[in-house]
Length: 513
Ligand code: KIV
Ligand code: ZN
Image (tube, rainbow, N blue to C red; front, side):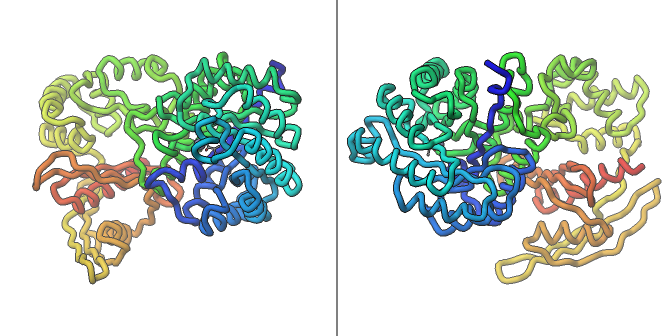
């Protein structure tokens, strides 16, 4: 394939197909935040929504069109007049815009959903494309349920919409039914047989019902498609859509197999993933490729040993390449001495060989009882055994929270500054916040005269029962710093939050020492 044909366009539909799944709906402000991050990622086309479907959708597409520069802004429309008019209206303020019109082409959809004959469907598709092209020259046509459509009818309708002016032809695997070889054959057949097919971009749009969305999308590229439709974290209808980060990193990592040019800045991937989790509340599974919490975490002794010697032993891409700060050596019962050693160095301890051996034995007995041994457990363990403290600067002396359904939450905290062994008491503060935890965080900030931005916050139970231990994790920035992560555990979840917050601040302080 000539070099210029190797440019692959990334079409992000997080705000349309992604938002369509249960629990993922976003407010207009949240959509705008996501669109800004997509622009930072240098996504080629942002599908901002389906304007005719609701006033909120219309207004979100309009605002994104007005405020986001860089990517082409696309709006979805069924192949009917009202939808296309609405999309044209919503896209008016956009500098670069596209109408994405679609109609189903499979027998089952035409007969049972549309109640139309193929000839009627073809006419509607052509009329819709012509109407759209009259106002906006950049028009994409999607043959919904293409992978279950008759290939001859698909060829006919694709040819007709190209003649009507469509520039991008999308072949969706709407129900996640196809397989790589079958999908490849559909693209190869269309690209070979459709008249004027060389003048358009063929696009892939996959759903993940059989877990094949990314594989199908990559195979479509190998068969000539040059646009991938996808979502951040793979969110979307049912089992989701093709995950943007997986396609992008497969292309980045296996250039010899996928020799395509992208405009994407992969360093923005991790931020984009976290933002989607934050605004939708849909947490990414820890073992999810690229953006899962464990994607760059190593626990087993053999792996940790290999990683310390040369990270290429167990990492095919770097966490830094997606904007993370580094790999994580997770301490648990599978960790070996080399990993443990590395961890205590990272925590700032200087132990002699005999002390390391004793600490490691102690660590193994803790690891036998717990799934994951946290940094604070290791600090406590070394502290207890050798009286050597880590670099803890701030210590929570006490806190008090007033909260209830009819009162504004208020927090009071007392935090000590332990720097250089001198206990210095910091003024006690009472501050109000949106909720009890927010009040607590704000009280700590005020007491320490520090301003932070909370980037990550989650709470998980780590034991069961009424006296369950809860673990809080925070990731925060101090002014423009990088993100510092902290963990805290307690049977009182608010105490766990305060500990996590201070744990992150202690890590920040350590970088200043
Ligand atoms: O899955 C699908 O077919 C779609 C179309 C509207 C492109 O999302
Ligand atoms: Zn879809």
